[in-house]
Image (cartoon, rainbow, N blue to C red; front, side):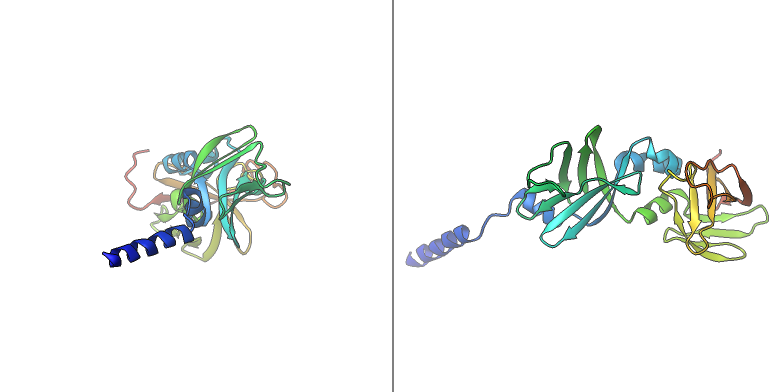
Length: 242
C-alpha cells in the first residue's frame, strides 16, 4: 500500500515539474521546413501542366518555412520573387510579424499552422488560403509540367528530369523551370549555365520548345513572340487524344 502511495506522489511531482506542451507549440516545432504551394496553384498545374496558368492572378502562391534558432519563420512570397513581412512563430506559441514593435502585432495579416504539412496565410486584400508542403518548388513544378521522356519526328529521344537535367540528342544541360512570370509572360525553362531561355507550350501529348531570342534585353512582360524553333516533341507513353 505504501509502495503505491510513493509511486503516486512521484508521478504527481513530475506532472507539476514538466510544463505541458501546447498544441500550438507542438505544431511550431513539428512543421516541415521548405516550400509550400497554394492548393489552388497545384490543382491548376496538375490539370494544365502550365505554371503560368497555375498562377491564376493570385499574388501569393508560395510560402517558405524555415527554422531560426528558437523560432519558425513563415515567409509568403509575392509573384515568386518578392517577400512580404515574415511571420515569426516562437516555441512559446507567440506569433509576430518581423519588423513590428509588438510581439503580438499581426494587424493586417493572418497565419495559421493547420498541421505539419499545411498552413493558411492571408494578408491585407488577400483572403486566407491553404498552402501544402512540396519541399522544393522547382523540382515539384518541373515534375508536374515538363518532366518526362519524349521523341521528336525522327524518333530521337529527349528527356527532362524533375531534378533539372535535360538530355537531348546533341547535348545535356542543367535547367531551372520558370515560376516568376513578371519578366516572361509564357511558360519557360532556362539553361542554368548559358541562361538561354526556352519557351515551351503543350497541347495534349505534344510539347513544342523554342529558343527565345530577345530574353536578355526584354525581361519585363516579354510575350515570347521572338523565337526560333528548338524541338517539336511527343511524350512517350502519353494516351491523350488532343
